[in-house]
Image 1 (cartoon, one colour):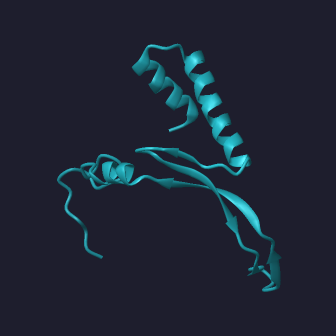
Image 2: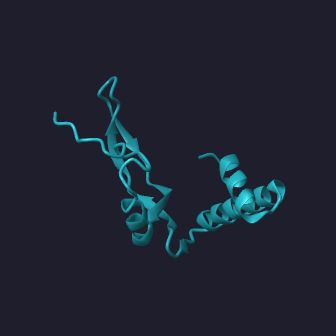
Length: 109
């Protein structure tokens, strides 16, 4: 689902204009980005948590040459799904999203 698809769905469900919904979605994403850039974390109960994690420096290898390459420490944004959302997704019937079609028998390898 793209941002445009999300805007369309929200506009349909709420009766708001696509422009109003698009502005709101853009502002939400901008607020999350600003908070992460300030090192804050955002917890949305029942959905998940956005936060910034520190990655330690490490030595990696160039796969082409095998040469050791220093990778400096860095900060990366991460999203952790809430238990509630995990449970809701796990409860989907097989075939609903990415699962086997209904009535399909598992195949053995």
